[in-house]
Length: 192
Image 1 (tube, rainbow, N blue to C red):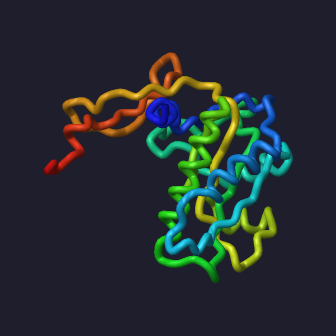
Image 2: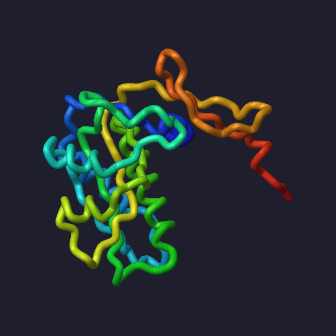
């Protein structure tokens, strides 16, 4: 059921780093993105797949992990992602809607990951210049998003936004990650 996949598809930030994700699995996930919708069917997205521990360490150094968790620098060694998919746009093929394509592709990849028993996190806080240099990305491509992937090593639960209307995610003393979500009645502004 799609609702169960969506509920399980949270932003996981800690992984079993020693449990590898192979390149064929990454290819299967990108194939889901390939089959997804694209504005004007331009298909401007391109992908870099990474599951090599040495390359992953360099990618990891280019990422910011959790803006609301001020005292947390990101996953420690042993909890870092064993795989990444980097979403690029081909500048010559992109239009004003490339961001929508990226979101659709990212969601397709993550839902596919959940179906395979994996988890992920879309990261937009990227040192793009450094990452571009590390991976020798050609100038025709722009880095849009990095998706970290692996077997989750943390529990993430959905909470209801409280009376204070605070939507910031947080961790409790047991390191359970809590994600507040608004009620359905709070987000539907009209119904005809």
